[in-house]
Image (cartoon, rainbow, N blue to C red; front, side, top):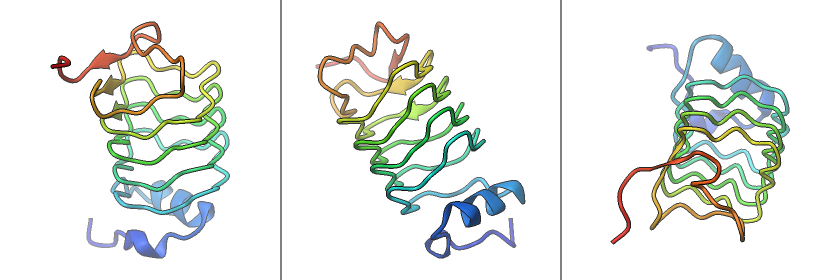
Length: 132
């Protein structure tokens, strides 16, 4: 897409959602710590390597989103739709995952970081590779 915005210029939730609404899906490396993305639709976006620590993603639609190696540390993912998302190497430590839909989301048992006591198998997640 020739009119895609440079991700470093997307410094607000509104700018991100406007770019998404215009058809842009490539947001790798985005930095929006503490962003308010409640109930936003970012389905299918590439948010790999994004900095979204402490973000509020309550009830957001992130179905099929690539969040590989993204930081979602201490993010609120309550009732967020992450079905089929890529969570390879994603930092989810201290994230709130109450009611989060994670069925068929891919993770790496050696690299994806979960909150203490979280069981990805019980959440219906798929291992990207077998542990060694």
